[in-house]
Length: 98
Image (tube, rainbow, N blue to C red; front, top):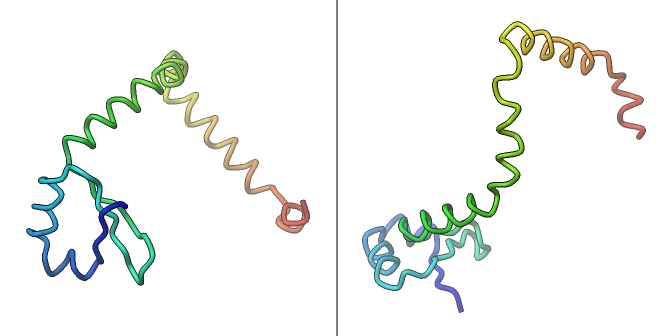
């Protein structure tokens, strides 16, 4: 069973909750109104997971990297302006019917 604490307990006993987190190295689920609201994890574990996640995503991010720097500032501004105009011309009634 995962460790849990309440948002109120976290506010009142921050040092104790953080001590428990460091000691067990297990994530702690923060409950608000008896429902899971967020999770806190040890910072080093976060860094490890982030590194693993970024390594797994690498092919996708490399695929997008090749497009960086292909447009000039002027071309980017023109594209953004055209996209903005397109969205301004969308008929809200038609949009909501689909």
